[in-house]
Amino acid sequence: MAKAKVAVLISGRGSNMAALLYAAKAADCPYEIVLVAANDPDAAGLTLAAAEGIPTFGQSHKGLKRVEFDRIIDAQLRASGAQYVALAGYMRLLSAEFVTGWEDRMLNIHPSLLPKYKGLDTHQRAIDAGDSHAGCSVHIVTAELDDGPVLGQTPVAILPGDTQDSLAARILIAEHQLYSRTLADFVTRERHPDWLLNKVREAALALPQADEVVSHGMPCFGIEKGKKFAYFTRDHHGDGIIALLVKTTAPDEQAMLIESDPARYYRPAYFGDNWVGIRLDLGDTDWDHIADRLRASWRDIAPRKLLGLMNIADQF
Ligand code: GAR
Image 1: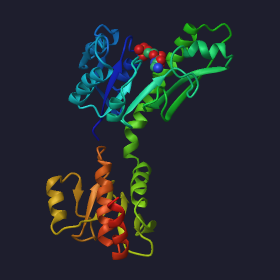
Image 2: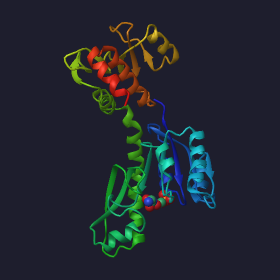
Image 3: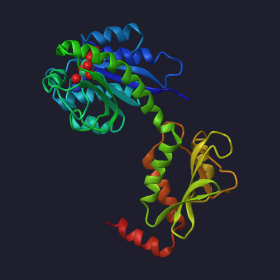
Image 4: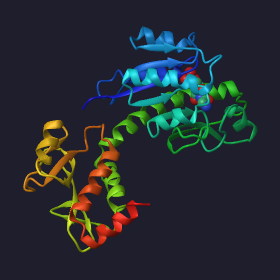
């Protein structure tokens, strides 16, 4: 399985970036670092990354509008082939456009037990509040600062006499361990059968009168008391393949799809020529395309009356 390509954005020291980079040297690490970029060309982390043979990019944001600067960074990320972005001490507010462009593909590490202490001075605020524990969190980046679903946390006990510096130093140790592990889990979640089934389920059950049953040992989606329009197959023939089977909607479509991308599409055994298998375990599934195919397959088997309702709904 190809490693997921990750770009890391930093602003200074880059010790979290270094932790990600060193973890990526393990043969079984599911990600690789393809770019380290900074909003300060003198960021110490850039020197470290370059010495490790990682492509780097440093450009000051000074004098540029936020959106303009983010577009420059975005262009670098896209050119690097990055599939994911890891913010590691990247002290910049991000434009909405940038966040949307990396929706569900960008993580951040923050030195507090979120949702506590978003923003700055997290360590001092935890000490001042008399908390027994501070810690760190890795979360998915959304438009709100230090918000977004938390993927992992490590609590760190606050010691008597801790200053913000002594506490920060200990939390940093926890950060270095948490980030790499959480990132590794995140980039592999799209290969887990349960995660993939849930994604399919969400799109399939959103269709009118759709239901889910088990048929031939596979989760399958149909119209209530009617025909089936999709099957989810995992390792069904002992081949390890996770795929979605949907109906084709035009003659020869199966052959055309297979020819267009033989690694992704295949002729499902026992289903004939009116169905096509779409691999979901390649790590680069286009979920909008999957939703479209489910919808087209649903249309293919939907009774006329229901189809009429759907056509009316589509006009609005
Ligand atoms: C880390 O402690 C990180 O959690 C924090 O900046 C430090 C960067 O250190 N990030 C934030 O406060 C983001 N809100 P590093 O450059 O050595 O990784």
